[in-house]
Image (cartoon, rainbow, N blue to C red; front, side, top):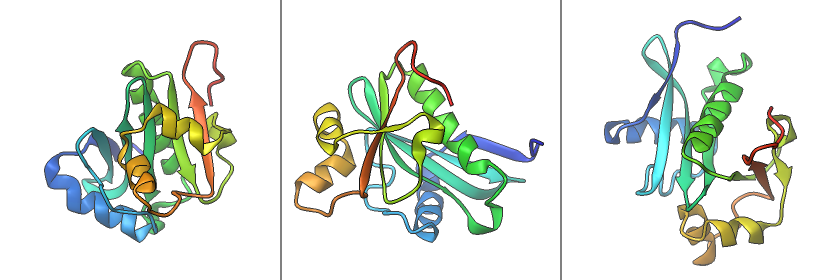
Length: 156
């Protein structure tokens, strides 16, 4: 059953505090949230923010920059809707792949496969998460994932 009161909309500069709060409450890194070269969305129920997601863009590929649903709104497939909307956006912009870093979970249900971190670092060297790691920061997640968006790739 689809909740008709749910809307996913493009985030504007005035949504930065909302995105940071949603990410923070989910335990996600908020550094560089809504940096130049990124696209973010806010998920709302009845006009109230309940989730957020972002993509850091490179040349022909994007890096998922967090996907979070507020604790009291979890369990109804809203996280899946956020992730799939970001994947569809990346496909629409012509990306050949979407990457992500993760500290847990099985992302294969979304069509992702584990790949070496070097792959994303080479493919999207200017993404804020990659630049932060290169400058001596902590590794962004325990595993690196990729969803192939080229024709013939499996769809989740």
